[in-house]
Every structure is written in structure tokens, then in C-alpha cells.
Length: 182
Image 1: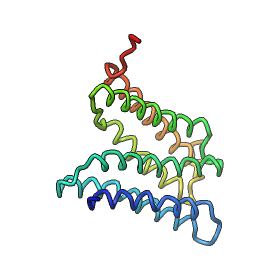
Image 2: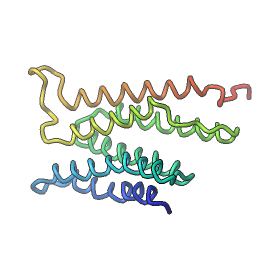
Image 3: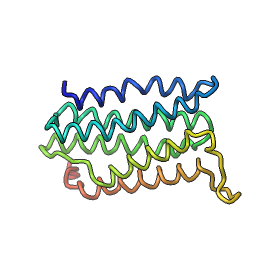
């Protein structure tokens, strides 16, 4: 296993610790959960850097890196739904998009086509990680200018919008991978 893949696996190993601290109510647990989340999110950048810099790009890494991202973000979204910070329909949209794009990739792979990560997918992941970080803060209910727009609502809007946009783009750009003649 390459160093890059070990870094990715660290992100996966940290997820249960993140979940435990995020749902705990011991003093300071919100900040510990946020710290674990940020460290985990930072490994996404670090493993990619190491893989490219030291020529450690591997098939395993191509599989496990996006999986680790999905597991981390999904864990945070489920916590937000449980806490009432995010509507379940918004979480469902994110999870459904992940299943749909993964399915598209599998069908394309069966036909000998590899679907590379699109820039919109990278933007979706980055913005989701940033929004989740803010939503983990104890000030997540802060309303901008006393309006209905809280940190939670803004984060949800950004996560859903980037998720829907990137999902649509994946299917439009890769529509030939779906041979709908059958």
C-alpha cells in the first residue's frame, strides 16, 4: 500500500471517532468533532498531493479516495439530519447523487470507459467539506442579519446546489456511457 493510500485510509479510520464525538455531549465535543473533521478533510488534499508528487497514483487509490470523501461527508450529513440541522430530503439528494454517479461509472467501466472526476465534482466535494465544517461549529444557528438564512440553511443550500449541478453535469457529459437502446 502506497503512502498516499495510507493517508486515505487514515481518513476512513477517523470517521467513527468523528461520529462519536459529534454525537457526544461532553464538554468541548463539538470542537473535537470539528477538529477531527478538518484533519480528515485535509487528508483529501494531502493524499492527492502525495500520490501525484511521488507517482503513487494507484487503482486502489482511485477507488478508495472518492469513497473516503463520500463516507466522511455522508457521516456529517446524517449527523446534521439527526440534530435537525438539515432536512432529510437534502441529505437524500446528496446520497442519491452519489449512488447515481457511482452507477454511471460502473456502467461506463463495463464498456471500457473510465470517467474521471470532473471539476464540478471536485468543487462539490470541497464546498461540502467547507459547509460541513461551518455547520459543525456551535454557532451554526447564527442568522445573517436576523433573517431566516442561518449557517445551517446556507450550508444546506450550497451542498444541495453543487451536488445537483455536478450530478447533472456527470450525466450530460457521459450520456454515451449509458447505452439506452436495450
